[in-house]
Image (tube, rainbow, N blue to C red; front, side, top):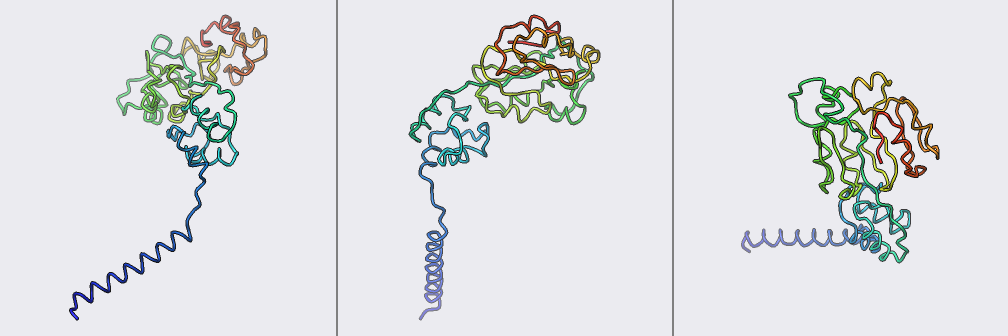
Length: 261
């Protein structure tokens, strides 16, 4: 027999055997699919942002399918996704609380100044690593827009040197929270409630020199709050949104103007 034909037969035989082995292995070692999880994954937005607290949409879908997660955790999907998930799971959709990101800084160019001429890489991360930021306030927004670049919903703009979030466009996906080197962005419920727009933990005198709109820890706000929603720790006020009624007393009392509604 022709040697070439023999070689072809041998190679074909090896291929056939290997194919049979792989076919058997795929059956023996196959991971069973969770049809419910697959169905839930189909209705999730696919953002894989991690706002739900899981590794991504597939992780959240698996948790929903086995009943270990609540259906209202997908912030980017909102009410529409919650209803779709509830329909797949055969459960009541319930209520979904709208949330938004907020920047805890009002250190605009009108309220503070730069401490140096920065000529490095124009990212907040780079500026923070090299100099701690370019502004006089070491806790404030650097303003180079890392959060703007991370936002997939065009919900953030840098205005007059400080990042500002549009609650109407924000999906509370937390991507801006993750990239902010100053950790001054948080996720809060969208409701009429007071928010301290400052992150400075320096003593009042130092804060005043750095920013005219910085919290100086004077505790005026705590004294006028009727629900005890405000506390001051390390020279910085913070407000518990679950206790805040949105009466506006603290905002009216704040002489620094760092509390907004």
